[in-house]
Length: 244
Length: 282
Image (cartoon, rainbow over all chains, first blue to last red; front, side, top):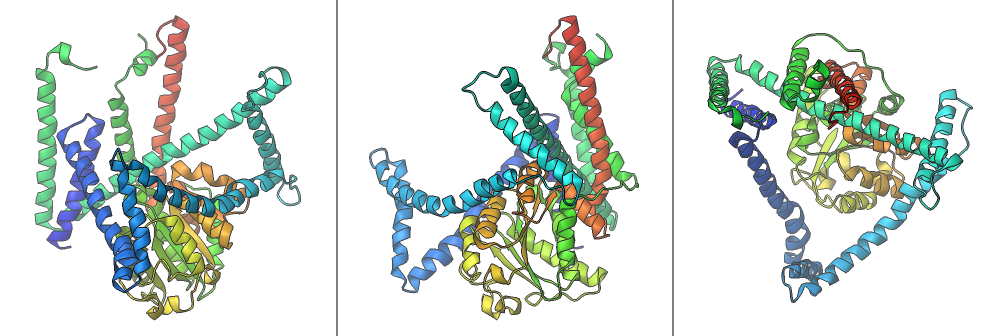
């Protein structure tokens, strides 16, 4: 591996450590990493939009004589009138145009995708012909959906049989939220694991060459010094200033 | 103040530290954690395994680097599997920060196929990367009409008609399925715009946070399979018999979850003890 590649990998490792330092408390190293991400992402996205959208979809066609591309360009410019208090009404025309098209495209597919397909699937009879477990799941889903709907029916007091059904509904919702929470915990741990795997790969890489190993020790030394400085600062602080 | 009450008032940074130590220690220890393969992952594996030589699949790398931990292992496993079956891959990214990452992924896989599977994968003949285009819904709808509308050229500015793999592809009719690996609303657009409108088969690989939300689509047959988070990737790696970073991470996941569950149990015991004593429960 060349020095250039190694430096990029090292920068990644250092920025990872800077980001993790936030778990202790907010600090300048974390701020550097945070601002770097936001700045680089914003800059990258602007350039990307220019070269993947503006240039091939507007500038080049106009330059090639397709003058009618000026019409959507004008509509786009009209959006900027939102910044003027007096003329902000002008921006409603492109917004209306945009929403009209988006709604026209979205309604039929969303109707089929999120409503019809889901409704038909819920309404079908339990299937015990193959795996019995599938049939049991079908029944659980029907009960869960109906009871959850009862829970969201607020025109009648949740008492008696109705209250019991609503209670089954809330348990169904809680099981759903619980599974989402479980998956979220797994996702967050996954992010941490991946970063630790990357740090491990970086440490392994530093062992391949003596000059790389020196960089590793410099980084370790800086981290140890920073931790020591923080400990000394903490010890010097008066008891009243110590945050529990 | 007993142990449980002290735990309730413990500075959260100690929990972070303990969790970090457990994760790092488990990662440095070598042991395999058995992974039970779910039906939804198996169905994707079986679909890819049933591909014949020359069949084309579309792989959507629709995530940013912040979801790389969970979705990259899926991408490696699925694409290597497809290429091993001599299928062809059309690669796109509709996520703004995904283009560079997707290109690197493709180049890595081409290398891996050469070194590990002794297969010479040629860009343009076996795999093509069309790059990034903004406004995913419009791009997905346009590809349903003709790939050349949103992507007149590939990532390297080569005209699509001069790329061998694209010469036989007009739209989704020539694609066996879309394997969408995503971490945002782009997934909904693939289901709504590609599956509902054009009827192309869609299989999903999503982040753990999103996985539970997509099971209804699996049941209704709108998607043919679902890989959820790192576990989904580990399951696929197990089926493909090539344990990678996701399989390795499973032992860390288990130990981290054990720590979290123990803290939840201790926290709840402390909560009930405090409540019984009539103290503050917050």
